[in-house]
Length: 464
Image (tube, rainbow, N blue to C red; front, top):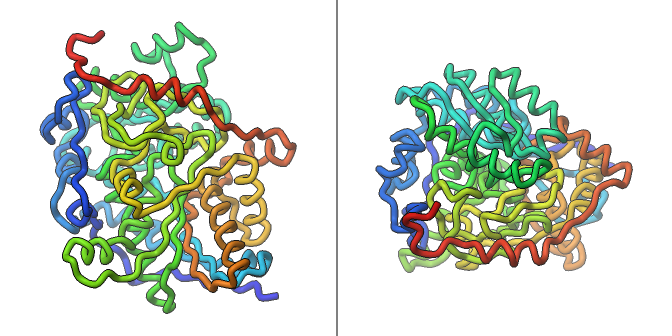
């Protein structure tokens, strides 16, 4: 039995610019709306939340944006990340498919989140910001921003979804090592959190609530900005270093991806992998020329929070309290509180507007998988390949195994590439629960129907 990896670091192929898909999209992204009037907001309106350069990137017409030198200097700590071939897994599955995974857990914080955290911290520091606030689910984004703030001498306050705050205390400790203040959300620090706790002192929290708290905090203090780890255009932009590297690494070994797979919560790691692979296809589509090959692209979400597979495409707030602009996206409703699964980073009610548009146009597909089968796939992957996936990343592992078995049935020698967006070594409590048979599967029903009835409707002026 062969145990050799194809291990492709791609040294000498450092990506020095981010790819911006906005000018290549075959549709116009609907504009964000003011949360009070539900009228379109201008880029200038976003300056109260984000630094000027981040706002510029959010709406930029430029196809590529150069990565600043200080950001590249930090990227070099872990980039390029390796592309690995899962030969042991292939042999275990007896599949003719070739399975590759891009290992973003190679970074100091153990996930892809540093790709945008470092950029956002740099732009904020350059423009005079003193403190950043943010939310985090499983803690990977909060950890990445904490590290980035330490590098660029910024204070950082992290509102961590309460159920993850309690489940994943080692990741909370790591944020504190980097110097961040970490609060369980809902908290008593904000009006939003206090109101929720007064109604339900045991509320498990959600990313939507944590976002509301972080934005309220930023609005309430001078020299403070808010930083978001997923969903928005500039976040996916920064993550495209993943896909750009993967393209070069596959080319180096003479491979072309037939199938691309990533887990999705808000969409950052998935978008970072797949958007560069759509570039040539979308440009040919817009020009009317011959269309090049487009890989099959699969977004994998939890059945507990299925925004693509069971949500609707509509304007909705990105946070529970309706403080931030409303976005046109696939959503379960901003009031939806997902069940307390261990993949905390996927417990978000909405999806990136870019990915929502691509899904609506049929350019990507989506599937939802249950928590128990996800952990079963993760354990098999760990036994075969050695690396322990984060619970979020394990959703991509599960889908890659399923596609490889489908290829076996059809005798198709597919090239499957998935993003292993983070390691799971700080998630061993979740694996312990799995091995003890304590995990449950969740498929919300009436909760989604009830939440979708709360979508914003005009007018909101004067609402309390």
